[in-house]
Image (cartoon, rainbow, N blue to C red):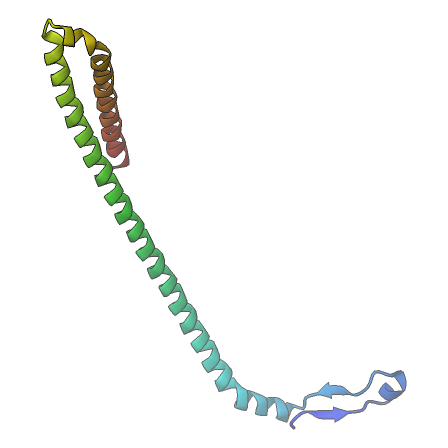
Length: 139
């Protein structure tokens, strides 16, 4: 063992026990033996740290792309649903206007339904306008 136990005068009497001391020749020997290993360990540690940062960045980027694609799919689905609702509301409005213009008993019996259909048509048009304004704001 390159380190030496040395008892200093009075250390045993004081209850401190022996102390470690390193001689200059031993220090040089430690540096020669452990220096390259420590240097390699530092280099490997730095490389592994860089690899971990790269892997974390790639993982974050992949998750962001997945989230963006899921949001795009949801946005397209909601847009198609809104378009379908708008076309249905327009068709129902035309049907309601056709029934409203007839002077018959059926026209008066379905008056509440006609008012409700017109309200649905207005609501759908407002939702479409809000959706288009939201798309313009996000783009």
